[in-house]
Image 1 (cartoon, protein in one colour):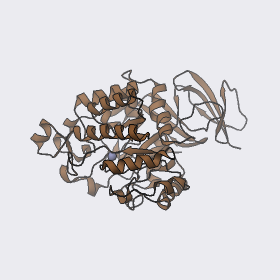
Image 2: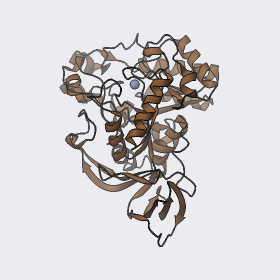
Image 3: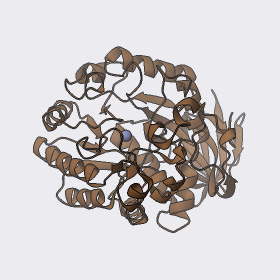
Image 4: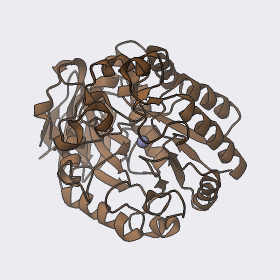
Length: 429
Ligand SMILES: [Zn+2]
């Protein structure tokens, strides 16, 4: 029997306690003087959170193992404080069958650092036309319950309606990448405004997101089903979500760390590191997103970790791939941006980075209270550590890190998956 004693951790900001973990389960919380044979993890001054859960990770395997593998992405996730990640379906081949989903699950188990839960495609090959094998994926060993064509929008309203009706039968959810392709096509890469005009970059207007969000909350109401909006990026989308929630519509939403901080002016030097989809927005949008995360209109933080090989990212801005790394820096960015500013306390961080994402994804082993009987998935955070991000220190295979050179306050100290320390101070344990 393996035993771990965590001493003196501030449990979700509610004061110091000791935690005893036996065989992967928390068995005692309180003042525990000693536990015979236990490994001791001293956590004085650290905040203990339930293990972080990422609703939106691109692991690139199968197909682009030069950019990331399930093993390398799992390592980046573990040092970032995550105990579970949802692996997006836009791999090559696409995760649109039960077999493909089970392969991702098995590769995650083989890596053994975080629970890798596959997301299934909504439509075959992400083509937006024919529904993928949603039921078969759900009934497979991978028990897929989150479906997304992420990278692409399910733009056809009839297909979206049918997908919502289908997943309702088993309590699944469709996670929508909201981008009307008629208003923001594949080349759109810069927030549409004065800056995109001056830089000569194809504009990606907020309305292309907001019209899809508005349509999809109405489809969720009509079908009685559950919709999740990925990477919300505009104040207008926040307004729609606030209205929809007030009506009792079953909608949830996520925001990325980068959309909580980085603004569109960063692209003025044409640095493709800052090319992301949806694009970085003006400060008004960033401030609305922070407020929405703080007041619960946005339920969760999700990284949209999007590793890219150098030869895909280091191009002229218009030709470079979309996306940024995020797993290793997410907690630090949320701490530095939201906790330091008083917009979230640690209990709220636990809510938006663990409990809500676990609930949305239906992961019953995660996001549980740090109490006797819960699986011992936890993240220990040093709230006062200041770390300067160095992209060369990443465990990801890619280097497209928009936080490089920034000093962030708040760092993951250790991550524990079912009682086993998976990461410690930025390294795999
Ligand atoms: Zn997306």
